Image (cartoon, rainbow over all chains, first blue to last red; front, top):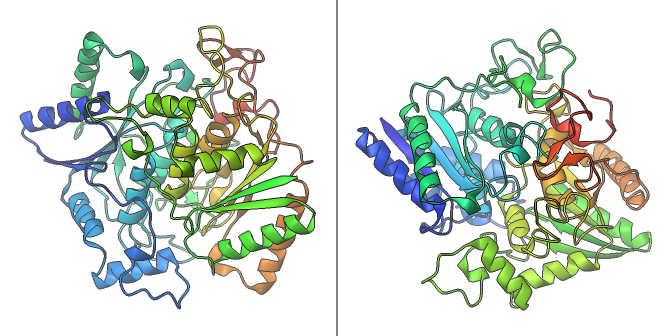
Length: 265
Length: 265
């Protein structure tokens, strides 16, 4: 199968760099085709601006969504954006690997999402009306492809547990796993978190690689996170609120899973 | 008082631009000193990399936290970073205004956080041991200052309600409000969200400004979000998990508020 690794860390001689190399080797040894977007090495342009909209003139008001729709439809997007979209279309699975900086992805990766996720590609897909609010959350351009986050953190696992001071990792990652991955159609696998990155010696690195190998081996077979699809009846349209009889009375992020996959810690 | 507006939108002739201008005028009319960091206009460098670490040489492994600590302590950070830190120290309140792009802040603002929030300034402050895990979450360099998010969204309020398909806005903003603002010490006010930004006519703009004015008038008096402080007994150290008798059995993000400020929608 085709696996794309989107990788955002400034230092190849880091734990992240070592894990990237391990993943590439392991996937290739399993017979997969692997492509890596190494955002720092590519000097990826992180900021979405008017330079991304060929043909835009400064006498109009710059609306990023409108310009994205226009340039995507006309096939005149900047080549770096087109190249990443082609990689996404090529991939059967995408692994996003990054250090958790300020409880989210590094800016360079956020900017990759903002620029590559064009209107007509990742959003603004399908009918938009009061009875169908777009092909998204389970439908969309990237439907049928799998995605997984690989996230490194300096803190301890308990700090990111369901009662940890930082907030539970699943909740912290919800805007990414649900809002960035599930939204344009990806089937989302449970994340692969690596804690206490300051204290990784050779023995622990081996353990991490062994766990990571198992996760990579399950890329196409593991049970995904059971996010509820938008357009199959669980949500009332156009309010897009969860039906009152589902997870009644609750308003936490866990209600967007059709079953609680992992027992709360 | 001194108010800093951190503003991240590429188009001054947008709703965001109009709201920025309104806020500046309104705050000045109320007698406040106002400073604006207009990140797009400043061509803010979004990507944290080795160029941010004067004296770093490529024969060492680049560790962003280590280099940040070194350059901050030595007073040799890049001038653009130092200038923003000085603005933060000057401010009594900081308003962060941005469009919600892919359920988080734009990359240019995320990169502002990553670069300005230096080790020794926004993290790595205070004793770090098994009995005191840093001056953070209620303590830190920015303690005593207030912060508020002003966030524009294309979607409807119901889509971001507690049972909305996108996830509840408070939960989506938790990594920012708790992880970026409360962490280095800010007192965090409830956000000011603006929905359905595609449909803002003159009448609705006036209504939005009227609500925004009330929020700005309460910047120094409104009741903040009651996030639990890390170092006053609610969390067990060093596991940093919430004491079992507080919000017992729960593991949603709401447990990090000492009282549920707003009834769930």
